[in-house]
Structures are given as C-alpha cells and as structure tokens.
Image (cartoon, rainbow, N blue to C red; front, side):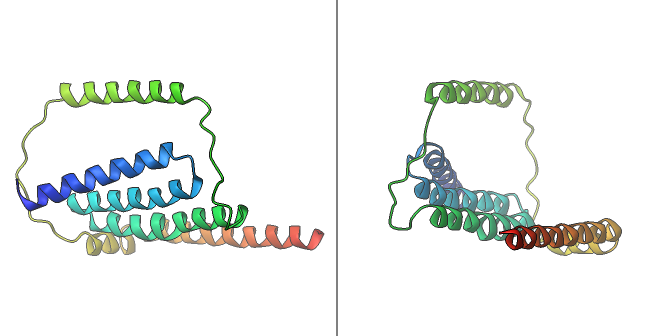
Length: 167
C-alpha cells in the first residue's frame, strides 16, 4: 500500500471516529472539539480530490468561523468552569434505526452503481480559475450578493442596537 493510501485511510478513520464523537458524546464541549477534527478531515478529503479552493474555504469558513462561534457560544452560555453540561439523547434507538436505514440505502447505491476506472490527471490549482471566473463572467451576481450581504449586516446591527436601546 502506498503512503498516500495509508494517509487517506488514516484521515478517513479519524474523520469517522470524530463524527461519531460529535453525535454520541454526552458532553457538549467534547462534541464541539470533535467537530473540529471532522471538519478538518473533510478539508483533507477536498485536497485529495484536487479541490484546493474548497479545502481552504472549509478551513476558513467552517473551522475558522462557525466552529469558533459554536465554541464561544458554549463557553458563554454555560459557565466556563462547569464542564458537566450534558446533551440529551432522547431517542437513541430511533436514531440508530434511521442511521442503519441510511447506511443500507447508501450501500445499495454503492454496490449497484457501475463504477468506471478513470485516468489519473495531474492536479492543477483551481483558485486562479475560480477567481478569474468570479471577476469576469460572474461579476454582476458577485456584486449583487456582496451588496445583499452588506444590507443584511447593516440590518442586523440596526436591530441589535434598537433592542439594546429599548431596554
């Protein structure tokens, strides 16, 4: 087995185990930190697929932004010293049955699909192609989305200030 295959399977096992910890951990902070390993594992899969832009976006947006917000939210809503907060698993049997049904469906899809061998192509960076495409062919939608997001940000600040003033 090649070193890249060993690394791939290591990343796959770590990602699956950390996703299991996210789903089944009884401590909320452990789930949040296991989510970090899961999201980094998916970024590594993007690198294996040759999607370097998606890998960096995964790290910056999900790990750098959203996960940090989740961790801060957990730390701010619960006392920092009180790490005994637990999450409730109300219907574990129903969840396991749903997961088993989904695994069976995915297994049928995987084993019944005709897989063809592809020729390995050299990996080229995709960031310059995406950047050129955004700033030439898709410039107008890019600018419309940026103005829309700016409006949403200004509206959120306005609503937060108005609620603050009412108190």
